[in-house]
Length: 467
Image 1 (cartoon, rainbow, N blue to C red):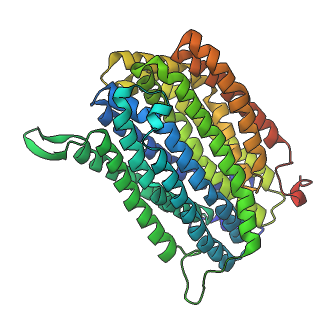
Image 2: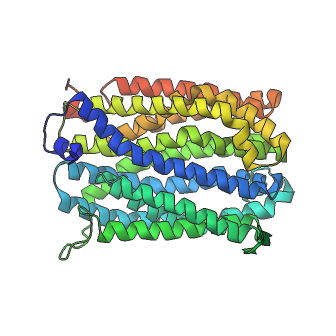
Image 3: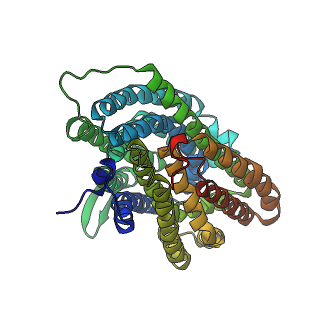
């Protein structure tokens, strides 16, 4: 029978180095697989849209950074509740964890509705603000508008997945993520292309192009999010609804959720807004450069998306360790899981360096786009381990309830280094200049996050003297 090392940690039992590593892997592997399945979905999406031409890919790429901004800021409110849930579970107070879950459900959905209204309001003029080619404005606006309508579903899925992960259940969100990927592929195939005959079989199709790609993603996310929410509310051993337990709004918990979430929202806003400005710098280079940038970012996900899977495991692991008062483990577990991310991203970067032209060739038949995308992607490959360190260290800090410093470090890195570097480098080297700036910035960011992790100031005050 497999030992539950997470439960042993909550009970205060001693864990050997081997058991700590096994615990880290048990939480991380399902989340990594989920993120890899997301990358596969993005590759397939890009390949499907790529069949429509560079203009269609550029239309989606133009508004992608703006989509990240709205989605990331909306889902940042989840962090303030999931961190508290992990810490309450670590302390053995499951009833309070369930009430935190109910508060989070109401608050975060309200935030997502506000974000949806704002996104819908700017969907029309957004492509023009980003200096995109007028020929792709209509498709870009349509894609962004449909994305805006999906924000409450994105929020619901993020909250449900985050709550389950905080309880130590990494497997269910991972399985649902894989299922959403499969649904997205099916819906896209039916909605993007017109009806056609393949291998003698008539395949129906709506022929909606870029709009069909957005609708396919909305449907997949919607179904997946509703299933995740049902599992959270009805099946989760720790967090499912119980008779007699009612929603209670607890002011100090709501204040703490805001104190934890607002720096995360600011951090994600800093990152995404910098990406938007980067796209605005790149957009005048033309459709080929915008498409190549979009495809290269998608392909790069093979490296960095596993890091985001490990980040969620890090927040759970450190959060429950803090809640359980494990002064002997918290700092060490933060280093173990960050080191794991660097090893994995080193391996994935090596794979991507070799396979970049092949992967990009699957996404688009445009040889000029493939050549340019592969060349810029190979510029940044060598710093992916440091990128991974910054991603996972952020999860470690979140689990410890220390969210503001990461925001300040990202602000310094993105706006103090990447954007000022990108402007002259793009003017001189085109798209390659933007990726050179990215490489320098990711190196700096990884270094400062590792320095922060090496100290103990991110730990709760009572744990800083632990050895």
